[in-house]
Amino acid sequence: MSNDSYLLSEDAKDLYRAFKSLKSDDEYKFFLRDLLTEVEIKEFINRWKVVRMLVEKVPYENITKATGMSSTTIARISKWLQNGTGGYNLILQRLKKK
Image 1 (cartoon, rainbow, N blue to C red):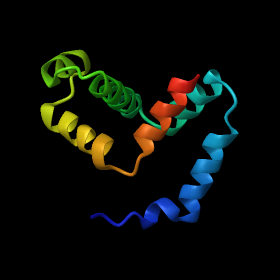
Image 2 (image 1 turned 90 degrees about the horizontal axis):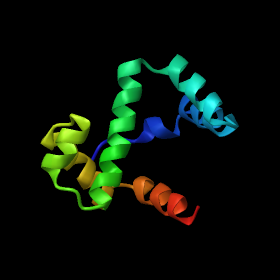
Image 3 (image 1 turned 180 degrees about the horizontal axis):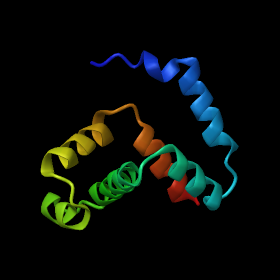
C-alpha cells in the first residue's frame, strides 16, 4: 500500500482550499487550465468518463474506443472504484442525488 501522507501535507490542504473556493464552471475551467497542462486535464476528464462507463457496465473494449484509455488503465480505475478510498463512489452518489 502506498504512503498517502502527502495528501495530508499543508501544501495539499492549501490545494483543497483552492478548489473549495471556486464558485462556477468558468472558475474551475480557468483554474484547471492554469494549474494543469491540456494533456493532464484531458486525462482527468477521460478517467472520470471511465468511472461513469464502468458504473454503467460498459465493456472495456467500448471504454477504450470511447476514451483511448488502455485496458490496463481501465482495470486500475475499476480496482479503485471497487476497492479504493471511496472517493469515486462518494461523488457518484452526490451527483445521483442532484
